[in-house]
Image (tube, rainbow, N blue to C red; front, side, top):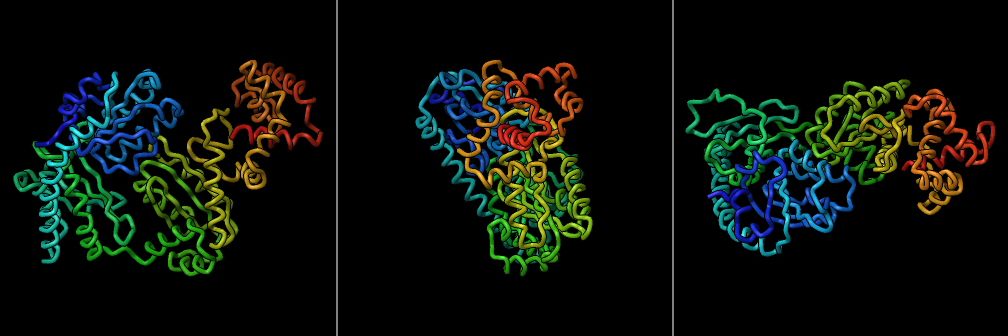
Length: 513
């Protein structure tokens, strides 16, 4: 019998914690558990398999930024975690409203544990129950995968192979390509008369009953398997059997739609660029991926909980703008290369930047476009600079909006000064330089809770255009003039027409990182 979240919340080991569901309560009644795990690590999502109740004492969340807390929620939801339980108390008096809102939007049941309980005791008691259930599921899943292998060996179609999985799990099973095109589907035999079963409504409850599993062929993500458990079926069984079936489905796809040489070489090329492979290897892989070794190209880095699902959209964008592209998704990072037209490299790069800004990305995503690389051997440099742009441009420190940063897309060329400083100076040298140039302004900001350093940066970024800077800061021109006079009095006068202008500009850019 499936062990549900509400059953666990009523278990004698957990009721002393006085648990209260704070978000996605509609999902809690149907949520089944596969395991209980505890961790204070915020980057735990990639290490989880889905279906877990995650317990945390809240210490790491207490010191994290609001942005990181929201990202934590979405990462767990994307990974398929069943629920998150947070212990409140001295470290974290209450669950932040931003986390509650994110959990509600993601459909992730969020539970507040208002009293302290030993997590070890909870896990020992509940996991012992789950182990017995899991052993039975594994036996059923192994029988299903064996039957699927027999069907494959006898030349069965994808639909017939999927029908074995559907009957074993009591789930509607659908296999789609990365672009969303249907490859095969099946319903359990008892639903055969309802072959035209209406698509599932996109509700929190239905999302909780649906398991998504990526299917890779020769290391290339090629399809997605979705199992929607129907009335009375077991979500955990569907999850385990689905994962057990991946190798069989990969073989079936390889027989019917093997990945082309270009796709395989493109993925290998990106991995080689990322790992810093020797130049001769890059020159060898590039032609097979359809990329001329001497072509100008640009690297893209996208960090997103849905990086694998974004791959097709990004490739279509890059192919539309340039001549060829290659991409590779690993964990929560999507890497891509795009070839630019000879003589129109900057124009193509601008089009790619605009295209990335128009993509609909999951909340918490951020991307960077690297500088133009002259040939495939310079591709690792473009990729490294794109990653550095994410580090220097995606900090948590608030900064006034400006042309350097649009939404969640960062342009490496707009961060050239910061990148140069990070390559040339260590952290102590950068801090000392900023303090030497802006010390008086920073002290004023700390004492008066003002924003003179940020104001100076926006003004310098605008080319010392007072009217434009005032618009970006939403200030009256007179107020802008007053701020500038205060800034000039603290930093030794109007820097225009002096050799100090460049140093001040660099310092304000580094201070914003």
